[in-house]
Image: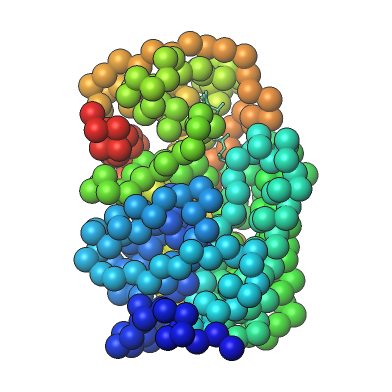
Length: 358
Ligand code: UFG
């Protein structure tokens, strides 16, 4: 039997946690997880973070503590490891779990599908299984706008049909949504919300936490900030012959702090017992389509610098345009994106400058 004292874990001695106000955040050292932990704490929740640090750094836990001034119990745990996860559920009392821990590189998932299916699905099923076993009612799952693929009608609502996934990564998001829906239907204790994120960008205004891609970034904004920092020579814009106003793709770029606050709104809803269905889905975006060139121009303007870029071939698998209808999140969660694209791109650059010591 696991014993906190015997295993040297004394973190929680003397700390009383109210299970309704405590949230387990898996993948909480990562980009979205760390920002969400901060906003949960700001909203009065206690947070327990687990992360295997496979794509994140322990520094982000320090960042969360510095921003909030609060202690954050942190355990290095791989959510695929059922025994380790069991210990977490036995040690801490919490009603809600936010599950971020997953691999997220679309290209890598095409090259290594098994790695993605194994990690993303087993970790998610382990979490759901533990919640059922230990009577923990509320689960929030990180889904993605990738489930909409190339939608016929824009903006996409939560009712827009999902498209056949174009990558194993996207497939794990769809499969996890389905697993959650079925489990909420079948098991009385479980209530679930899936948040479908559009394109999360930016960093905390303190520049103490932000996105830390390993190797060459796949996503636009980390590539932009690394190019501005001189780490990359030139940004490649993937195609300017799309059927859009300036020929480049349209996306819905959502500020990371706004996105984090959407998680707080969703947890509030679950904790207050206000869900209308046992499983609900919300789009989390701004509702504003922005082209790649618009984003680059805004980045240059707000940060007063010039960005070297060239137009290259389209990137295989990119959809022309996708942006959110946010009415459901606005009306039901009472949440709305607030920061402007300029503010967000400024925060992205401040973060890059801090970590590169520029
Ligand atoms: N882009 C460039 N140059 C780059 C990187 C990206 O021009 O160096 C362009 C892309 O072609 C696309 C846009 O910038 O038009 C955004 O690309 P990202 O890679 O930043 O984001 P995606 O929209 O491709 O994908 C993101 C997430 C996925 C998620 C998807 C949901 O990375 O995990 O949104 O829509 F599934």
